[in-house]
Length: 318
Length: 85
Image 1 (cartoon, each protein chain N blue to C red):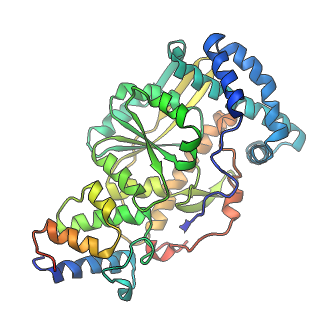
Image 2 (cartoon, rainbow over the protein chains, first blue to last red):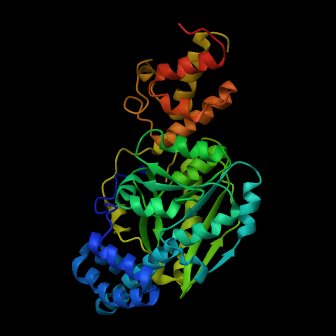
Image 3 (cartoon, chains in turn green, yellow):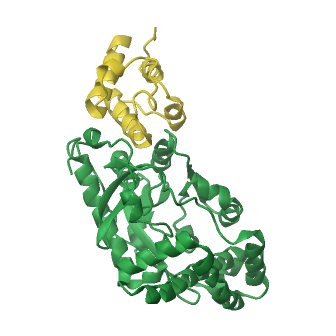
């Protein structure tokens, strides 16, 4: 288990600029989603030519997922960006009040309800897949406050989107500032019996573990599992997929109850839990290969220099 | 625990044994973050370990205010009704 610095090449920046975003917002609001998808068909080329880092990340992912030639992957990268854009537009449409047009199916809702009965809170662990707004729409019927853990750089960029998405809902951002008390806030939310939604596929400065993912070593954060184990809270893997036009599906796995069996080999236990999460993410991506929108060089992050390791404290002798 | 010294000894024992902090670093003015190199995950672990050891609940606002070792001693002395020095 190691401490990772923030991914050097990821800034949490949202592309498109004010005017570009405004154009899509107005289009979705006054013309609907289909004309916006049509415009997106052309705009997605922008990323191929003017977003080299995102393109590189997409090509790398597609190489590991499909192993195609560069030319074929370039075409698929375009589809990858287009898929991401469609989900962003769906998000806009849902926020603009068009959620009635969408069909949401929710598999495993009973697992979430069951886990919450214990009043120990619940960590919903997801990844950069699908759209959390769609998942959030389905979580509203659970009627328990949902804390969405976010990296501070993300919040600054999408503050207005967040405010609109969360207005009048039982959603609240739980902002990770990289400070000592970040995890204490998560612990407090769990102790209030609330849901804490976290993403488990991007290391944002905390401790990480390296493990094989799609055939190469990648770095995953240990935070979600470590906090669940210390707090005695259940944890559920959840992924929201776009199934088609106006259709989303949220799948929630049965709850797991991470518990350290002692201070010995905590690193080994964390690794085992995260291996299982990574396997379920891989399984999701087998079915929805273009819905992983983690546009930074995920595998390269594992090659970057590490800060002072914490193996000894965790008795991790991997 | 009934005395300030016992509180200090127990807190230090947790920091030494569970977080492998060198005893010579355990000074009242030591910063948890900078001097003891505890991170956010250690913070939550420490809160739970102290709660178990002292049989009390540490509220979020109190935990957030703990930046130095002395603040832990003082908080736990107060929680146990012991007059700190």
